[in-house]
Length: 129
Image (tube, rainbow, N blue to C red; front, side, top):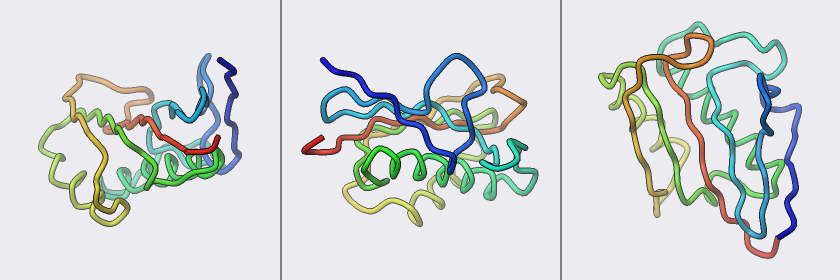
């Protein structure tokens, strides 16, 4: 199966040995995004809500570069260093995602890259790719 890497300047550049996303057939695997600003690479320092919004907007930028959008995400994984922030994830999701919502897992973790409080990765299906 042919694989294609996805790259956009509208999302933070990879900070390790990975691609922002990889397309394999109609499936697109979006790498984890933390609340980094695309231009500066600096961590969002606002509220947890602002940080979650930044992560979702980063995912949206990578999805767009792959020819899709948040509506094409079928599986979303959310990693939180504080599960008390779970309700904020739900609030932000209602602003950016529509029914049918993607399948989702939320996992509490001890630590994330750069001390971020949240990370999300996703799988997206883009028909006709």
